[in-house]
Length: 143
Length: 411
Figure (cartoon, protein in one colour):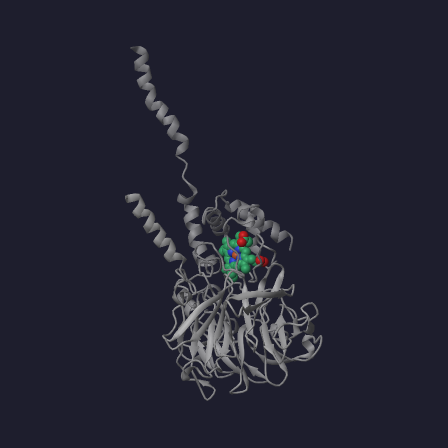
């Protein structure tokens, strides 16, 4: 009897224990992601398109590219410095120029990169304003 | 029984899908017929048809390591077959004139001697007519055309959107005078029979043209006509002067008639077809309203960002009389008309009278894109145009590499 009582008492506890770590909000529900989407619409969409698919030969896609999913420092510096290297991006060349977007705040850059790393089928870690700040400092030093 | 009828329905629908759509899926005026001659060759840019009816196309991505393809009609099956392929360079321009095939990479122009059948005699030893043209990424393609006096015209596109100090950077102002214009942003003229001509050996025939892809020699006016790709991003770069919708609708895509020395005004101005004025660019002190009477007026102006990639004056006799000496334009289709839907992805026709457009243009062939009119979603994107000796016209697609032939059958 006592054992059974103890057992019944345990069930809600167990439930709590399981529910606790699940409370984590998915990235797409965060404020950063939503802010990032707004920045994307205002600043990046015209070239990289609404679906992140880009424009063949002109502007590269942001879907599963090594730049979007890869090294965050490099990704942040693309937004801050722009990109005119015309390197092959996953085997294709794109002839447009991407300008520097250094006028965006650390928060906006972090948000937009968090957004693109978790949209269009991408899944990658978030980018924080602190990380952007750090890359901005490195760029300023190397000038 | 139930299963069997399902199976039959499946067979019928599969069969229907297999059957070619009428007019290769295009919407064209009554009395015309369109067919796909070939399909699947990738980035097929411009096209030239020999007097004998052979088709040369220039590729922007090598097909089996070749950049020029040659198709001929099999006289028994009437299928077009890939007869030859050569040239290990990519590019856009191709043109046939006086027993020569001219073709361009983004830096050089070559020519190949043709035999009586219109076949290239030696694919491995072209003459290098022009060499060392600037190609700095943006607007790198070199379109070409010849006149009837031994001159070769080539577009050298500006490697810039609007000659800002920092290309495409928000608020960055224009360089004055724009240094890009010294070596790009115009049409250069060369001797079509010359050898190894550098840019300096040519003349800057016309300037103030941001980028031209479609161009043609008008044999009626005996002058060069070009289609300019207008600038991008008025709103992105100057949000306090232009809202997103204005940026989607401006500036016009312009057709210009050129003569030696013509200046069309890029980057200092752009054309606004909604008010029919040349507007001072925001990079050069404009406010979206201030206009000027300087610079060449367009022969006709089209909505913004449609990307005219092919121009052809129709000189044949097979189409109804209104088409004679008028212009066909292949609009590749826009990418920066958001928040409005993307536009273009069609071939339009502009009737001409006495060497001038009559002011009305109409969509001639539509439906290239299929269900989705976006650069990536479009099934086909019209790019190059040509006419053959019988009066049929050809349209290339640089998305899937389709070549269409449009004839007038009167039915």
